[in-house]
Length: 283
Image (cartoon, rainbow, N blue to C red; front, top):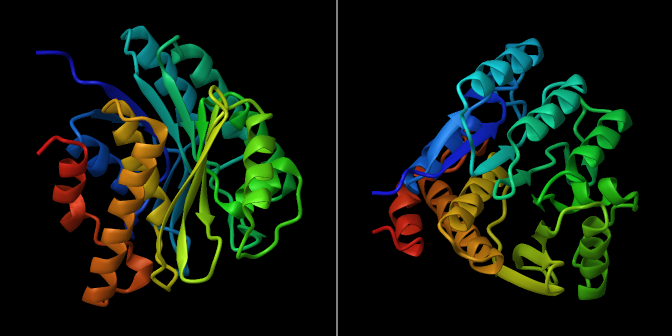
């Protein structure tokens, strides 16, 4: 039997409200991939819609953990980054990339910092510059429209979008360095939403769109990113992995809406895992 593939997920740990590590760990593990975690911060809840949350910055712990893992000769098939808790963490994560990156390691960066046309209140323009530098080192990035426009220095505009607008964003993002882009929050007409993909190695652009379910569901980006990486590490190409991830995320949102779960609490992805495994041909 072959050794399990191994991912390190560099995200925050929000103890309540399904997102970040509490999403990445179960989803990627269910796909038959070993998950190592490197928490960037610990929060009592995520920051979306909750007040008075407890926050502990783990910046000072990243370097010692990196050194310890290197001493153990641990290796990774993929490095997956999400929410970073401080500007100083950019340098630490960059050093982590240089320490553990091999010719076969996939670096997937989710540049978590903004949505709906606005930078998250805890970040500033300096943080955008740091994220831009990190994206230059990635193989794949998965920004939403707001994050993408910040990364390339364009003004955000609300949709619906034209294919020309989306494709200009994709190509501009690829010029930062990553060969593959998955742009989320894409819709060409009202009532649909999904993602656009770009693989610069073959200059192919694709669109994967589903019917929109209205509401501000938290944690869906992490659900999507985790399922996308699970697809890639199970040897599916970028478009198929994106399609699998969108279907999984939409199914989880539908179950959440039917259950009338508080949208701040995250989506009911747990009940959708059997479908994900079927799509990954693991069940």
